[in-house]
Length: 130
Image 1 (cartoon, rainbow, N blue to C red):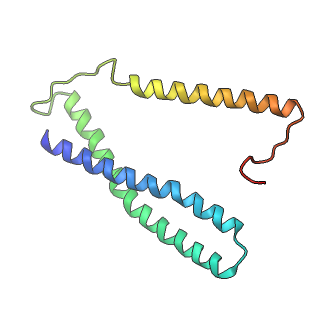
Image 2: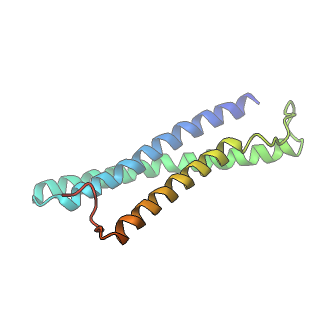
Image 3: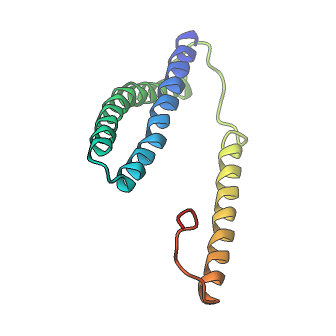
């Protein structure tokens, strides 16, 4: 069971680092699309390439460790791992389901507000660009 926790800790570390790169890469692309100077464009392209390579190096162990966790969990539920007696609980998916419901409701409210804006003569202009 001790090895499982180490694998889980490293999996979380690699996934968090990988997603940090996933969230930053689109920002580089936005800056690249807005840039007109050739030197800055070359610099941003180089940054994007390096970040993409680094993200790939983080994604591989994150996925491998994730698959290892899935395999260990299947073995544990089958009763083949000593010291593991926890069975499936109804409360395990509760936080995920609640988060998904809140996100769905927030997006539904935003979609209704956006539809009202468009039907009342609003425009499709992005709010963060003037």
